[in-house]
Amino acid sequence: MPAPRLSTRARIGAYVALTKPRIIELLLVTTVPTMIVAERGLPSFWLMACTVLGGTMAAGGAHAVNMFVDRDIDKVMKRTQHRPLVTGVITPRAALTFAIVLEVTAFAFLWATVNLLSALLAVAAFLIYVFVYTLWLKRRSSRNIVIGGAAGAVPTLIGWSAVTGTLDWAPVILFAIIVYWTPPHFWALAIRYRDEYAAAEVPMLPVVESLRRTSARILGYTLLLWALTVGFSPVAGMGHVYLGAAIVLGGVFTWYAVRLLRMPDPQLSVSGGGGAAEVAVQATAMRLFTWSITYISLLFGAMVVDQLLRSGW
Image (spheres, rainbow, N blue to C red):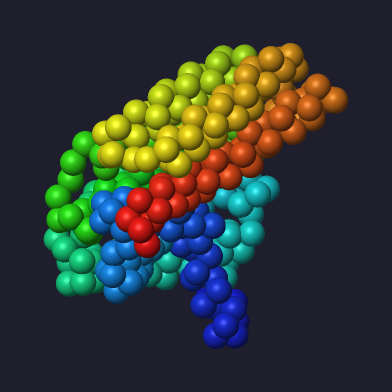
């Protein structure tokens, strides 16, 4: 079936939607602060702009391939039924072509304007997201987001290498911070949409494990995340502003995780028939999910403030 006729503006909007722009916001939240830490001040605006633009194109291409592969799942899940490939606004062939062109352009752009290492790291993120997460793990393992989530952590490596041309222990710890942040963040959302993932036969952790085991796993990753953020301070030579923020923000994150763990297990059902207990669990999970976004923004924001104050900017 041919795609419906749309205005140019609407068609551009549909292609933008293929890139999952809300997820790409994480790129800005992690890449620019990482560059500021690597520079010990403000890098050139040109370098920051090129790194963010190239990274945005690379991530957008990966997300478009993900939508191409998962269009059957997106038809089943209510929260994704509005996506362009489900509604027919864009054809699968057009989406895949767009994704490949965007990815090739991103690699060439990063190589030309930043450096080869950053371009190769962007390709690595694409390969992890598409082949490891989307094609291999997502439909087969409850650890899909644990391993596949590494793709979302690569922007920290890209940001560091863009400034220094190399990698070191500091960016590796930043990479690990995002890797360990991703499961609590995503599993909290998956608790809310457990019935939809179950209907789509996607084995997200809350689908195959009880609420208590899922919550315990969330708390475990949160504690490891807290330790990593505090450990980053001496490794990267951060100041008191960042260290204080890491301690306080990690404590709040842990408090939300403990609250979820203490919730009674309502034996969540695919039909959503858990009643008031299920609604309470989902509300608590969504508060944790919302905080996780605030948390990562404030943590990386604290890195910026810390470094700019110490550099006398």
